[in-house]
Image (tube, rainbow, N blue to C red; front, side, top):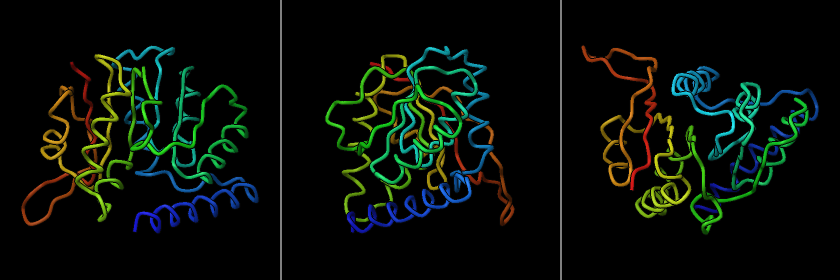
Length: 208
């Protein structure tokens, strides 16, 4: 099942890469452009340094890396386990004349200590995909948290956007080794007399 999932994403990014080469369309932005602006507004208010080491986990088409670079951030790294994703992100960055971003073909769960020393880690959907994998959901979620701990500096920040998990569930998942900082405003809906969020966006800080 995992191999089929990887193959499926590879097909998606290969099609997006072909489309980008044909007409310059970068493809879908997970959670929409507002999800990027939301995180960028928080980074600005939090006074994240332009020299901060920033990791985009599951970079996809690299659209968020482009926006980060345009905002002046200079120490950017994007990773994805899909070779076609990395090729697409590289093509998108080159088209924007952004040449100083590091792109790596890495499976976050099996990075074997390669990811270290980051001030900020950003996830828009990767934890969702990992935790919904029917083959190793429990192991994957546990390994994700440990890899994230290893990747972040002490007092480093973690930004997560999820459409599958509530605030309470994410607080529980990241309760060990992380301190909750704030919830970012996201669209809400009403159903059955109750109000809930379409997506959840939280900020955590790494603590030892």
